[in-house]
Length: 401
Image (tube, rainbow, N blue to C red; front, top):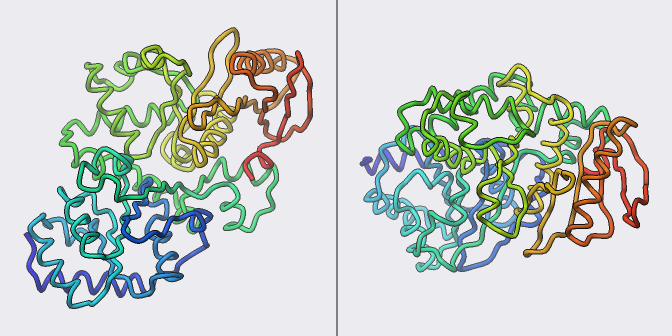
């Protein structure tokens, strides 16, 4: 529980801070944000990727008098659902009809309050650092009354714009090293990314889900960061994580994915059961986060490039798989249930690996009845025609743009 006068002071401080905050570089996602009355807009994404800044940009353009509350403020850690009545008083006194609730998912029952404000004809915008905001946590209160969008760290094109780099091979290497978290790109201080990982593990996962064995959670996380691009399963992760129970490993993996730290990409199969039992590929949300927290990753540059390509695809598509048949293909992309792309990633095509890489890609093209595919490399560019399939070899700096 929180005192009324203290709540008013905190919100006033937050409003003043938001007004003084630099809106930063205009995010690409801004143009695609839905802005529809009678719906709450939910922006979800990993902590510190720029969700608050994105909404601030939207507010400056369209809703300059919005009422803002950041529930992740330590001064509001005692906020309870009953305190929403006190918040109503502050909102009435402010006279605002547009409400912005930052990281509201930390308050249990928040969706009922948001639904109430919608019914009172307020415009409502919400941010959160957990992917379950997009579905499970909304319950019945907001069914049919919310629009959702995801925000990620800077894309390669945003990175180049922010750093004033020409989009070329050297920029790809720098992006591979630094990633796309705005605050880190401003300062270059790796401690920011180390602290970010700690915040996600402790505040977004351990505290929220009552996990007491934070050491094992962190050990598992660091192992996953060091193994991006590799296949794994819950059973294989028991030993390196020091967690004896497969059920507990699966639980931790779910939390890590929901917090946007990792994606675990399954093998494509029309059978969901076969998808579930086959190993999954590990990809991290950001390569800067990887580089700041582990000394060396297995597979090194090739797996970093693969992770980078995955993150680019993930910004555009939700249904991404890998293919395994006669050969293997890194990415199979579905849109509305239909396979639309097959993408292979190879740091450098050469006489030693070209046959293997093309065999995996053409096997995928044949399996899903596609006529052309793509191989993303660090710097090579070419065209091939193999078994009547067209294969484009694309340098990463072109693909990522």
